[in-house]
Image 1: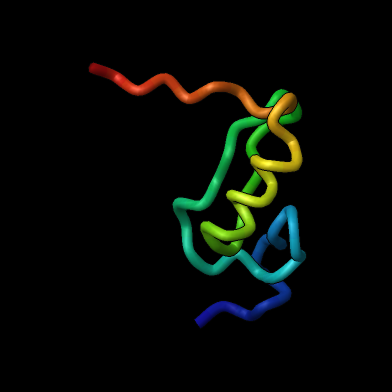
Image 2: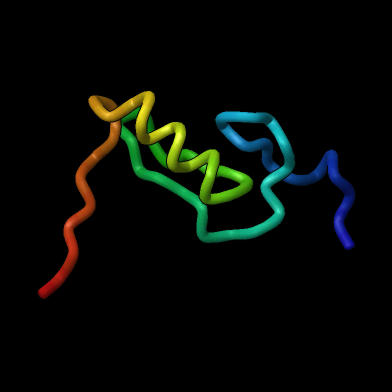
Length: 57
């Protein structure tokens, strides 16, 4: 198991990102989050900075 100091910090709450899949592409680059809650709050607070996600038909 990796050391906590080796893990990337959540953009919103600074907790270690231990689960992949909670990320968002913004105009500033890829942002990683520790959970869906942090990702959702970041999106609400930064709507104008996020790139739209294109869902294939």
